Amino acid sequence: MESPVQRLRRGALGAGDKVVARVARASGTTQRQATGVDLAVAAVLQDRGTRDLHDPASFVELLRTCWEPLTLDVEDSGGDQLLFSALVDHLRTGVAPLPVDISLAAAEAADRLLAARTPYDRSALMTDVGSHARWSSSFGHSARFLTAVVRCLRARTVVEVGTAYGLGALFLSDALARGQEPGRLVTIEAGEPQKSLSAGLLADRGNVTTIRGRTPDVLPEVFAQTGPVDFLFHDGDHSKDAYVADFEASLPHLAAGAVVVFDDIRWEDPFALRDVRTAEGWEIVSAHPRVARRAEVGGRYGLLMLA
Ligand SMILES: C[S@@+](CC[C@H](N)C(=O)[O-])C[C@H]1O[C@@H](n2cnc3c(N)ncnc32)[C@H](O)[C@@H]1O
Image (cartoon, rainbow, N blue to C red; front, top):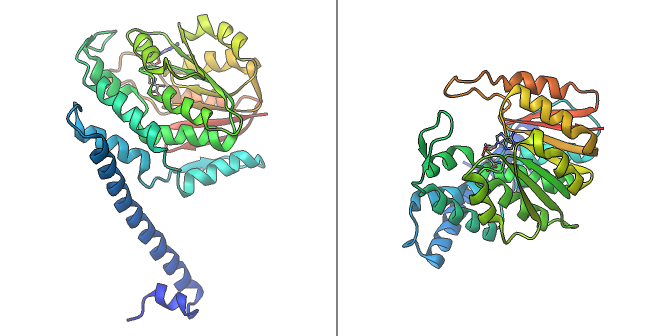
């Protein structure tokens, strides 16, 4: 029997059939892309070898998340901010893959980091640096979301709250360097060994400044350096109080049209040691009179555009 795609080619489809044909074409494309990702990963592995890797399977997985087909669910308040609408469309219809060189650099950095067995025993966490880095870092899908924000909103001055081990900052720095007008990133980290390890990873990135300290103490110094900020990525203290305090301290320094991303807007403390309530914090910050548009991305990120 003739398929919808064949019938489309000879112009014999009705409206319903056209939808079927579009779905068939899209799923065919997705399958081809998935195969393409495998071929690309195989080519990279053949080129660089795997002998020095601590965890080849995680390395492959990280590369896949940088390149595989990705769409994100977005709940958007709606509005007439064109760049914001373009970002929402981009996230819903297919988030661009990352360039090979930065994907490879991040996968290599992550492989070294995840193998680190140095004890990490801050607060309730008795673990090692590798395990802590695994659950606290941004990898492929998050990196693609952050890169899309920089690219679609043409951000040039970015502040990241919570550097951790520097992986999110590495991707942000790359996205900023590739902009039509290259931009810069200031990233803030309160803890060790995160600050030292991230500073090492980011040392040769010419567009990144790393700052040691907690946001209440260092935000004034940061904003004195940056001038008006057009993208604030809040990924530090995941709590209602910190969302609100850091947002309020940042507001006078956020440019008109600036975007703010809060990570983990539905965060529950896995150890139930703190009353974090980030969902409440998200409702408070997104109700601020300067907020012109809000969206929730993948049930995880809160995205605001300011007037
Ligand atoms: C989830 S991790 C950040 C991940 C990183 N943004 C990435 O994309 O890879 C959170 C980090 O924020 C740091 N942090 C928590 N509260 C902070 C504060 N008030 N000021 C600065 N850093 C903070 C923690 O030490 C931790 O390393």
